[in-house]
Image 1: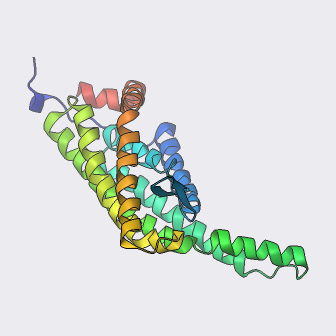
Image 2: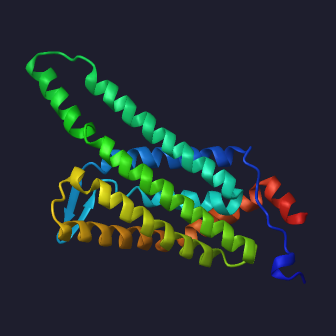
Length: 231
């Protein structure tokens, strides 16, 4: 029986449709989270934003891509999400700047667009910086731990990378985005940051068995992954 370090370090190639689907899903989630993030949301004593229920999915996709396709493929997915966010906010700016109808309905519509999409630039800046820092750390931890344990220890990799990545992402995002959603005090910021981090990590830990099933399915159905294992 081979020892852990004698086992092949396997990754699939990125030419399959599965990889493209994961990248597209990650980009869509990031863009929609940026729009939702412009709204402050309160559940009793808990302060969060409108993108809270979507964003953990981006990190789940990041774990899957890092584990199955490797660090380089994960970084490509991360920067695709970054580019999609920038394109989206530039599109919003153009839409807001275009001349509209000057009747009461047109004026009200313009004000609604400015109110909904105008603050998004700050959310996008917060999201982009947090996403780049957090996802790259997430990928770094996943890849480093897989190099040491090969096919073993998947749950340990996902748990460790999630904790590190989400901590950095949440700190960066909440600090920059706070004023855009109406946070005005240190106490509110601490509440927003703490519960945001706990929620994101809890969601990812809760769905970890499902994430592992998706990873296992992809490994079995990516011919290049199986070829790398057999090498």
